Length: 213
Length: 260
Image (cartoon, rainbow over all chains, first blue to last red; front, side, top):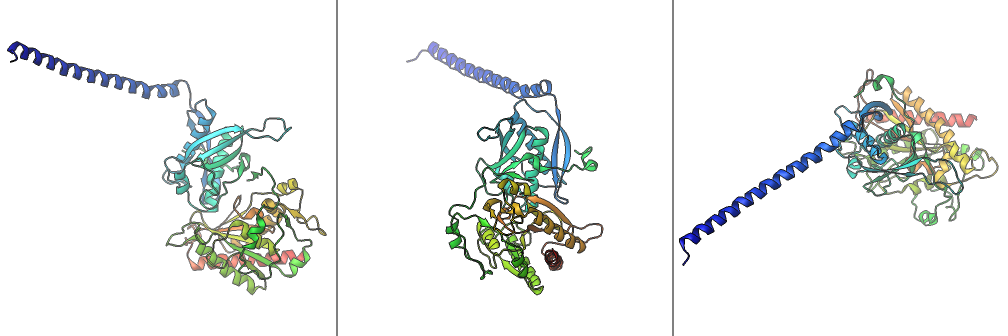
């Protein structure tokens, strides 16, 4: 037989265990909240304090007259060049999906990543050949891309022109889709080639470029 | 726009095997296929070709490759085949010889299209596409330029008594000037027919391998403007107007070539 005193003691111990467990859970949640708060606030502070916004030029296509229109935006670009190139193209693709876009492609994530590397040189060649940008487009962008020579070519040209205008060291551009080589973007524009970035040759329209966006 | 060519590959390895399987629906008089690893030979002299003025019409896509969806359940492959058929009839009425790369809904790789066109030794090659985007007709020449031809050390027109050897993958470079002239002729005729035209350069197969003045003609819907009424791409009247303008341009192109 358990005595009354033991029963009371057992009850008190059980109560203490539950109270301690509740306190531990509460402390854990508070610590988690504190960590999340730190994680979300740190990059914003970094961007606003360490990296001031830079004016960049995006070349947005116009399907009706087959032109590229210069649009100026302010972007906080990090120091990493690959990330900068990706940010530029991400902003460009965002311009494709705004209502009333002159080159409508409705896709949330158009560029997976941009890899930069020195342009391969022939043996004995000297000088700075520039950088080759390998643009990894998302399969979603390729699927959403309107099919046709003009719309597909404009998509590629706008990306090349945007990269070359803001990062002149990029002299050549090659496109892959979800990390894989692909014959065409959406049935027409050739993706097996490496393009010269300077050949995009945009023709900025001063009337529409000023104050756009 | 131009691209870099890491290596000017001459004739493609295994080409002979592909030649053996080529179907040439409308080119019974096509010359014998070249030997393996042989580079493309440009016409030795322009005169014989002018006597039988050949136009190549390449209706893009086919079979499992439908191309763009143009609305109303119409696929690009079907619309361009119809357009090419109508244009063929118009050109034949003018007394021109027309070679079609395909006359039916078949799968035809770019390599085979270029091979059919090059065997025809044509004076004009039109690669016909269609899209639901933009307005009017888009004209494109190859991104290759005469500079690329000079890199390769060849020109189709500078060796009148000897066949020039053209690298298969950049054969069009030697014809870039003529292609721009043909594009200009097409532009003039379309504008005359009140069809809006945009012109540019593009990297689209099989354009780069064509050894003839070549232009890609992409039909788009007609957007409504201040003076024009909007028309869908499937509008037969609109299509006939474009076909008529293209046929007139080719007729004018022939006259220009004969006078030279």
